Length: 80
Image (cartoon, rainbow, N blue to C red; front, side, top):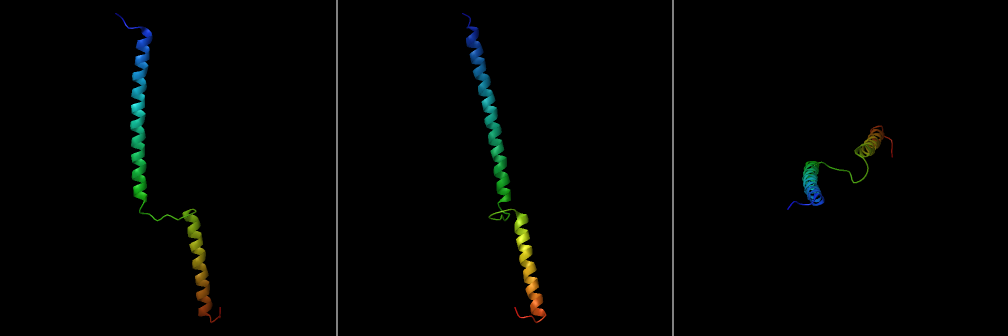
C-alpha cells in the first residue's frame, strides 16, 4: 500500500521544520556563549554608573583644572 502524497509532503515538511529549528537553536546557543564570554572579558574593566566614558573624562578634567587653579592661587598667596 502506497502512502498518500499529502502525507508524504506533510511528514517531509515536518522533518524539514525540525532540522531548521534545531539549527537555529544551535546558532542561538552559540551566540549566547559568545555574548557571555564578551561580558566576562569586560567584567574586569571599570564602568561608569551613568553616561559615556567621554563625559566622565570631561568631568574629571574640569575637576583637575579647578584644583590646579586653586593650587596656583595658593602659590601666589591669594586667599581663597
